[in-house]
Length: 167
Image 1 (tube, rainbow, N blue to C red):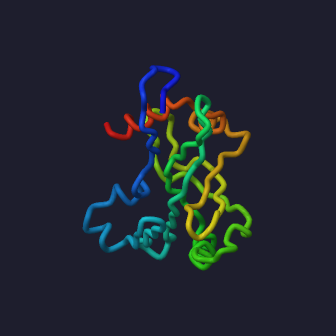
Image 2: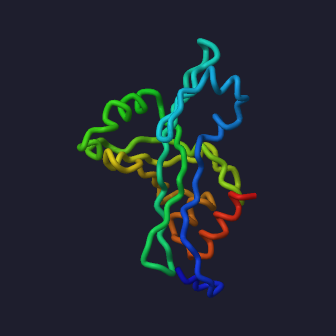
């Protein structure tokens, strides 16, 4: 794809994270004993009865491209309430899962180059059994990452995102 900013051809890859930051931060031993993880769903067991388990879902955040007809997507993990997580798991393979109402969630990854993104509120919507759930920021969000994603970006900005994840 030809970049309107620099004139170079870029292969448009999508930026993303393999796991929630909380899981990545654990020691290998703690991760092995406390985490039930897969490529789409992840649960971090509590260490005491006073704590609750933490539940994560791998999602995509669509971002319009201003200089191309495509859309790119951030691959982000979202933390959801345990009750919502159970509902997601129950409906994971259901062809009608997209009929469920949107759920409240928070971003579970630190996106480089922005003020803190961990805990940013988003809505999560199931989209179908063969696609990852979709995230959306509220139109009233004033966080720089939300503003940029809601407003759309140029292909060159996607390349900057990708470079920031490699460092």
